[in-house]
Image (spheres, rainbow, N blue to C red):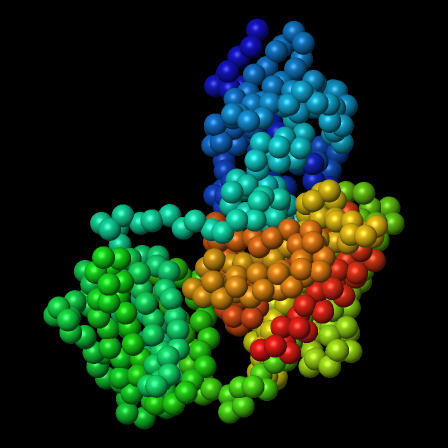
Length: 492
């Protein structure tokens, strides 16, 4: 007799994660869905290096149907598009009618049914991430875009109803730091104009219903108390530029040509911009910086004895080798290149937190830009977690690791990053069709959302192949990528 999910309060998923053994793990595994911590009367646990997670919280959140046939000892999970049948203690699952081998069989432990959930979760549209440093499992709906296994499509930003528009609260200038604050999240557009020199910030979907009053129709308000000694800005005005879209425009009249840097404040209701004098010879600003935020990402074929993709990390054999390859080829082509291969886990030791990888690499970026202000192009090299069938392409009889470009939507100028990535992609695929998987967009719902791309419009996070690719396949791709980057460098 089959029972609905409401009667299966103790049914558990098995998460196929082998855990690092470098240090003792906490006693309780934490579980998150789309960044929200999940609670359950049955705590996640480890069995044979596999994380067991309660199915109830996940199934209820996703609307997955679960049935249990006691007589046959078979569990069935289904949604509108997928049906997974899991025989208890069976070596395989049946996915939409086709048998699929399992590393961890479904089983019953102390009266609780356990299921192999990496297989289950991914086939039900979830992306699964294991954070060893936090001893936590994070599950994301696939449309949040975590692993690159979803189609690469332009993002659709949901519209906010006018009655929920945030209100303009503050416009401040403190020497070289300019700040705009509102009562809620907003997505600004920032641009520099010449003749006269101005910095223009458009705030679509923002109102004057806060502490800053709306100027009279067809007039502008002015920010007071700007010191005459400020080296960059003479006056700041604001107005309702487009009532239909409720776009507030803020205009900074500049005393000199400037460059600007949007800062990741960690607050989506605040825009922070740092101003600096423009470089005297902007045409010489063409150097390249290559780094690796997840520097220990590696490949199963290059790690003897490793078969689990979750263990494809290594202190020496890793993506920093790809960064070095890219740097070396570009230098041979005459480019000015700076490459760092910092091992953040070693640098921070017991304080290392994998979730802070982009915080660590941001410090490296700031340091390199200070040392080498001529840097224009920034490339963060990674490898993906998707299966080999998705990360490999054969061109003229030779295997290559596919490229995948990731764009952070939290950077207000993400469109510039996207245009840059698409430019590289077009050059690569013109000669090597199929080498790119596309451009992929991620927002704050899956973590960082910035990926340090706010430091340059010519910045890209590039996934090169996946855990099942080889170093040789990845290096072939880096050589092609170098040609495209060099072509762009010489043309701009």
